[in-house]
Image: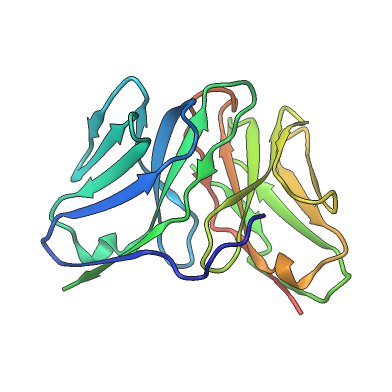
Length: 113
Length: 114
């Protein structure tokens, strides 16, 4: 696999604040996007997904925004809670044959009480 | 319903040895994926199996291999271990892999190579 730095981008917020985590994806042919949350010692967990024919999708306390023009994806978390502290990954999937999810580098979210 | 289960949780090996990691997918899922997550890094795609066949392979050397059994469980083998193979190896499963698909991950197997 490729080699990158050991330090993840980190976003520190206070409990109750809204958090915005950004992701730049690489493949303009990507058709489907997912946000995952990974808590310490656990595997990634699905949060929310969005298809390329949409620019916004809302879940419970979370909203994903997709800007295909600039290949940018964001995850907004409303009223952030300490339990939201984790590493967040965006993942993209091209609509072509036997494609697989490609993950971004991740952003660590730290929520202070 | 049981989620994706992986074993062992932790494995310690020395350079040059071989490691075997195992994964049981969610019942009804036919696709199994393997990802490597080195410390502080993102998830790097390793292998994808569906219906017993390898569907896709990531940019890893041939000493990383695996297979999928008739019951859809899978194992990942890493031969001639190197120090940089130390990582969390994550298995995920989904329904048939082609197209938009949510992967459900297991908790991972932590491999340490000394």
